[in-house]
Image (cartoon, rainbow, N blue to C red):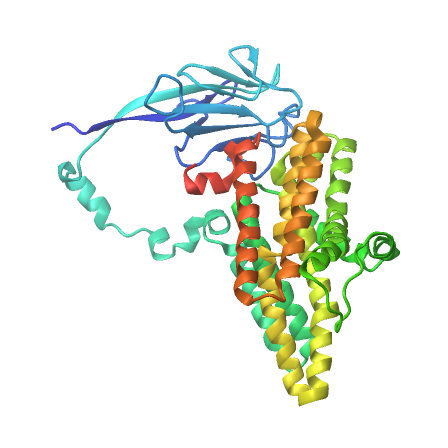
Length: 446
């Protein structure tokens, strides 16, 4: 009884020196995870910088695309150039974007760079019942890596087992234990951790790698802007010159008047403030050379979303810890004592930080999508930016204005805001020039 036929697909590297009796450089390809080729250590196929200096850090990717080839019910293997400096060539022709591969196609990274042959081999998978005694003995054998799994997992611990998030969580837990009794330090640590969790959720949805230190820098840059005279200038323009003066505590306004004031004084003003670091990254991207311009700049909507939500996280942390929590602690302490005041501050902190996914991060991430889209489609730049800015400001306005109506209405506005952000992320993943690298797309299979 024969087994099921299946094709095993791999790349064979040419022009490599191998010892006599050894196999040439073969790189198997996976149908579930695109393979990146380049000099960067995070690539699946890593090329020596000293030998292949003309290869970009992330030069190209090869991945399986199910059921998308025209006239075919089956999928196909696709190679994509990642805006490499020296180009990717298929059978001597320079690749523009992506292209489907056929067995025997020759892939070259640059004119005189390394070359690979795309190959497939038909293999037969035997049914489990046909395994002989040797297979049984192999199953019964216990290896050292089976007894000590940590010896064989290697980099998979970090890429597949959430080692970094777990390490960060344990670190914050220890710090929170150490901060018990110190309310300001405890609140700061808890806010930083919850904000990081909220941002990590958005980062995973986006599925595009961006340097963590650059995202953190965007967060702190927004905090610095809010503590600088720039904020005073924005307040003068939007709340004194324009009709954006925020209502006093005992001031009675109609809902329309409240909407107008919140639109100028909160929506337009705060969304533009949070967008400043993203716009700065757009300019930096134009000044830098590859590959840093792709890593740090804004070249597509996913870049704008990641930087916009990072900026919003900084805004939320400063607004919560610097304004709302101290105010409620002071008010409750005067009425009911210090202990209840600190408890009220903690109770306010948790929903404000976690809710930023449907609040500040949702508005700024949505605007970031349009900033990235304007770079991707510069011919319609101003229309794109106007639609994004006004929509983000409108969502922000609705949240601020409906808070006094009812909790149910506020919850509906929050869900709508998150839906806008999620839709922008899904569309950005579909538009992304590097979508084959997107780890969120790989996990979802779309």
